Amino acid sequence: MIDFADIAPYLPGIFLAYAALLMGLISPGPALLGLMGVSLERGRRAGHCFAIGIGTGSLCIGILTLTGLSALLASWADAMTIIRIAGGIYLLWLAFKAFRSAFRPAQPAGDAIARDNKTISPVGYFSRGLSLHLTNPKAILTWIAIISIGFADGTPLWVGWVIVIGCGTISTLVHFAYATAFSTAPAISLYRRAARWINGLLGVFFAAVGIRLLAGR
Image (cartoon, rainbow, N blue to C red; front, side, top):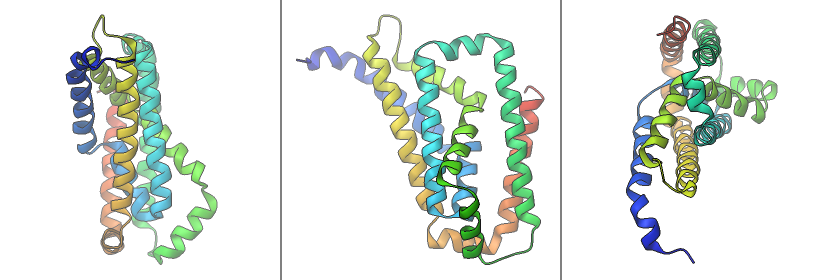
């Protein structure tokens, strides 16, 4: 039987790791803005699939970090360079799509969602969210920081798994909530009125971050 006295010493580190993740989820980044764009333009179902992809990517990086592979990648410059280049190219592709949406003729939102959801399956949106998160070097470094907060030398392995599974679950739920919020009627109504500006700003953000990654900064 598990004794609470054995668990209690590790709870502050575990909760601090969760808090660090939440702070990261609040600040806007490629994953959040990508999710916003998908949810506003393609609807709740697409946004939820995209959110689950982001959460799955977060869980995968967490597992790799716990097993030491992410730390190895962080110390191997060539591996991080490859990840950075892949992430930069992917973000530039997202920028292209955002700019294309900003400059194409306006059309009924329902027709756009229906047509796009016929060509992109739920798995497709899931894959987009997963790819966006796995190719973000900052996500790897963030996970290294999170694990180091609650999993020091001598800490039982189960503590690391509690942090990883908990953070992966929190990431999925928070992004799921973001997708729900961004796909509400008021949000979609605002998007319809300002679609060109929103897509244009998303394009600028993705392009700027993508170029920065490719430049190695």
